[in-house]
Length: 67
Image (cartoon, rainbow, N blue to C red; front, side, top):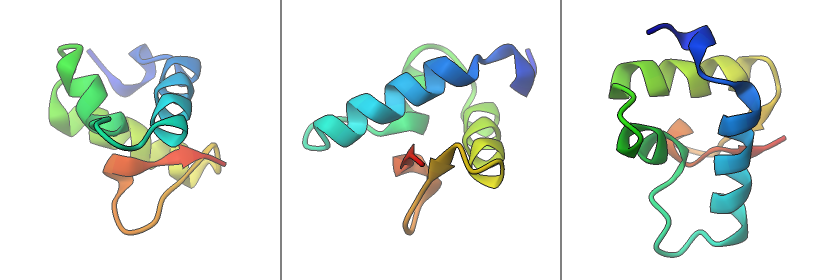
């Protein structure tokens, strides 16, 4: 599996869910990990989307939100 195998829209949906209800929600990266995606790959996908200005983050990319 590679970074491009994870659809951008799916990651954006997870980010929207986290933004709507942050309490009790594990965040974008941890939600991807729960789906069976390795942590390193999930983090790389989120960081790549941040660099493309599709997502924004504060201190940690684990809790990114839609740009």
